[in-house]
Image (cartoon, rainbow, N blue to C red; front, side, top):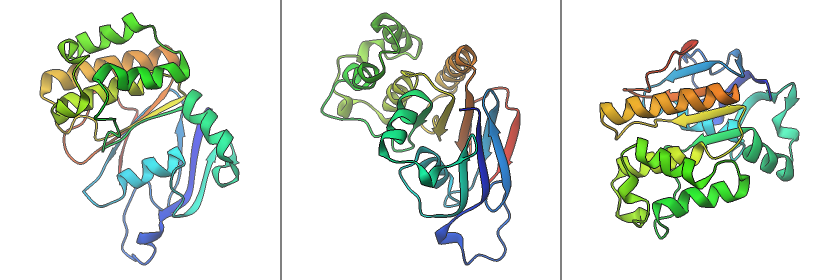
Length: 214
């Protein structure tokens, strides 16, 4: 997938707003593979909704979203499954990890579906992000910031044309945020992937091609 094209897209809950000002909603905008985008937003302006529309698990919006010219409303479940395994990666704001599994098991669960990374590569990511000692800890016992890092590692365990990260460093200190930004840029660079990062405050410091106000 090379392009994501939003044509007059607007969450249905915003349909009665007459004074909406946005670089994304109700605009004609194209996200290109290989480019990095920061989407700045106030709380409640739909940043998580945007990610959910692009990932295909919500469709309560007006307008059209196209992947390489194909309207995503025409995609059926098998097509979405392929996209989520090979083209689209998402780090959810609420993480969506399994607390009853260990940190490593949460990552391996995704990696076994894709076979994308070797175990030693995964362990190296745990090490780089300062949670090497947490690999065999139950996820539910970790802090939210530690869980964010686990979810980030999981998001890298696949081929991707685009990776979306919804407030990925809300609970991280500056040092870990810098490491995450470096790892993200390296992986995206290897794959030629596009990056979409949402933020309501602090954000990943990478070389964005475009900064948009939601």
